[in-house]
Length: 406
Image (cartoon, rainbow, N blue to C red; front, side, top):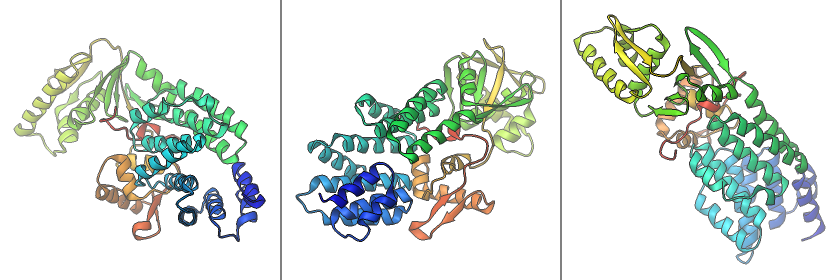
């Protein structure tokens, strides 16, 4: 490797892409193309970066498997940064195996972290945790140690574990300082800010209050019966009843909790649960059936009783009932939560992360675009969607988590 290539690689290692480009900008050999692609990625031109890395991979011969694997790794990192979640995990796994075979354990670990971050983005938290458990972060260099702790913090925040997230971010900040990479330091600082912002709203006794993530964690661990409208579940002192797949029952539970300690009128329950304009015998019968199902689901936590005007919920052990809901209610809150990271997403990547169809996501994006909440960049297959981060609160509790994995 010649001196210019070595100097450019060192410049990239410390986060100086312009310094790297000064040395290899006019060169067309494979190592220079790879370094130019990495530099363009650091400067934010991800499309140009991917093209350069693909040229570099082709330029490397069949005998240079290690260098080609590194190009595949860099391209996968760019794909993740541009939220192209449909990239081939098989190609990355093959590249990781090649890196391990040639003794490049640092880049092999980096490849594994890319896959873990992808799992985190699409809500497969248990799979991400299982893969993360195979690493000893103390054996990693500072940049990868910081990346490890950022993933740990991301999982903890998604699981509403503020204490664990804070500890991981403290370790990430220490590692980022040792690495002395400005972009890495900025990422750790931006993630740390999420713990200081409101994560949800609490509705109890007719009053509303914003809560930070640590306050949400304390609430879910308390003796309060919490109807969690962020994750469609009901909590009490660690006990959880999942109702994400039973939206009618969850809607009933939320309406009863919002009305507590008073009763919820039948007209209100029918109108908001079944979207009916008036109560007739058919809807009354259907309401009784659904209330009966809700009684069975909540039998260990609360009792649902009939009243002269409707129904009321009575906690069995809890002294308080509260509703935990999003900082800002929106029909397409989950889409906005993913876009709020400031990156540009394709509709197919959003559909993969949300576990829904691309057409459903496209309709949501068109609706949001009509109200200027999102904007489109590009056309056709290259179209991406983005929005500035929603001001004043974190969207951690809005992000999807796959029920099949957790």
